[in-house]
Length: 349
Image 1 (cartoon, rainbow, N blue to C red):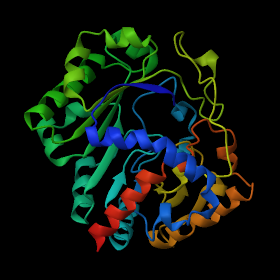
Image 2 (tube, one colour; image 1 turned 90 degrees about the vertical axis):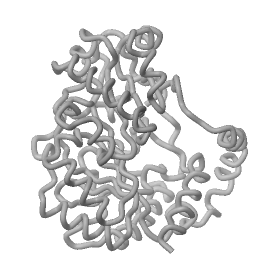
Image 3 (cartoon, rainbow, N blue to C red; image 1 turned 180 degrees about the vertical axis):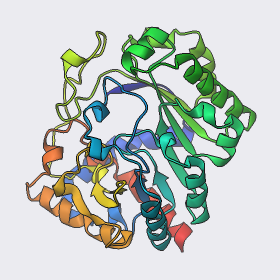
Image 4 (cartoon, one colour; image 1 turned 60 degrees about the horizontal axis):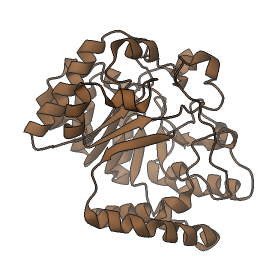
């Protein structure tokens, strides 16, 4: 969804590389059909999106969770999680994103214990996106020492009325205090974890940033991003259900015959189903379904990604993707993906 980065830590070397990206991206678009799949898929999965829960304790006005079917809002069972661990160990997965699509990961039973189990099988990069409502349940230092490596905090902003209007829950003060405590403790630990603040409120950007707490947040957070337009979640979110101040995304990226780069990684749902797209595939599009970890390992599932990409390139774009406003042109992500594949291969050798 459209957003503006207010703060984003980058090195001088990375800034220089960024300056060359448009040139390389342009070439990649021109030569896409000649680029081998191995260049961006690799020989085996390097990252897994793992939906340990699809339940949420907020009811954000801009999120599709409010329309989720009851049968979809469940926790992953212990049996499926144990099987997922076995599959990940076999595939030597090192990166896990624990909050794809919808759901609040901290609601998952024994969340911290699940992180420990992931570490035990060799996962060394864990990412979560959380609304922070349950941060108070775990000591901030313990959460930082034993928790995720990358923490994306989705928060309306430091205005109680707006928070309750947009997230439609109470506990503003507790959540605010938990977020600030986590940031302060992370600084004391030498910025052990990457903490990114994602402001999602309906007030103008300048008003959101003018909150007294934001001065400290700007100093302590790795990055601060403010959502400027709301994605329509395939038509589920409409202007009439949004509070005044929100703007629906005006333009969607133009689809091309280059399959979306969000289809490069596997997503395992609570029932064990393996899908592509951890972004907007909320209802399990059958055209993006690969199998189930009960019958298929992750390396085999990874090998089937190309079949779905072939369909797209032939003009048969999955139904979910046809009206999605989150399309990510793979040519724009080729450089970073090649780096990830090389790094992953080196660590697995």
